[in-house]
Image 1 (cartoon, rainbow over the protein chains, first blue to last red):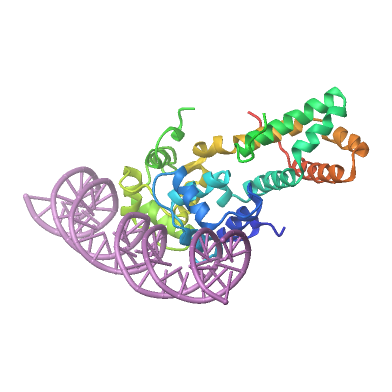
Image 2 (image 1 turned 120 degrees about the vertical axis):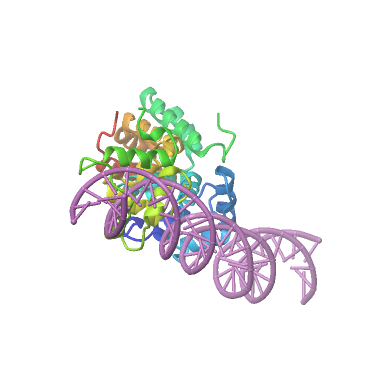
Length: 140
Length: 140
DNA sequence: GGCTCCCGTCCATCTCAGTTGACGGACAGC
DNA sequence: GCTGTCCGTCAACTGAGATGGACGGGAGCC
């Protein structure tokens, strides 16, 4: 496997940057830092995020690991457990695929589907919008 | 569960001391420290183990968390788990919804869709099948 | 072009995580 | 009783973890 699971902490963080792009772009280091600060007590500098991603620092504290995991929406064990990496990665990849596809458009076309299929799609779209937490509003 | 997951890091480490007693008594701080040093690279002082257990220090680094987890034979996520579960809940819920929906059926109906939508759905289905390959019933 | 704003990168700095060393108490052997 | 040793506890120091600010560069705007 050439995923982030085979390497260092830096690889995994790098993968999170690439996989989690609710704005269609990678988060900037400052966005991540401020987001982490918002989610946990304590400070988080953009420089340190950069150092972690590039492998210049590889031994962060518990607090920083928790903040990063919360920000990217992955369990903290993502940074430790290879199996969790695989599980999460597949879900992140799915989320990425769903983002690229215009889900609302698909939902519209679902009007021409039969009942069962449409309900299934509706549930999926619903979960997606929940997952995105209003970053792309105007759903409901 | 009223296990060690209801409190601070200190509570969880204290629980490990009490629960893991292969010699019939609690490990001494020095035993833990030396054991951790043996299992990982780097140093680990008995005083620091004591500080962590008593809550005087509560922000250890990744390296120390890995060492402690290895010594006591628990996954590193033991020190985190419950705290981040709700952050990934949305993704887990999505996975559940996708399991219930008959995705292959949806893909078949995609034949009647236009090109762009069908390609989007193809990517989604591809990710789903990838995700389902390694699925083990992690259901409670 | 010139200006501004934001990004990633680098460097100087400081804070605090983690170690070292020492003190008092408990238990065993002499 | 006395000594030696191992334990838990404490205070002080060291250095790595982490931060703040500065520099260069690219994109958008007038």
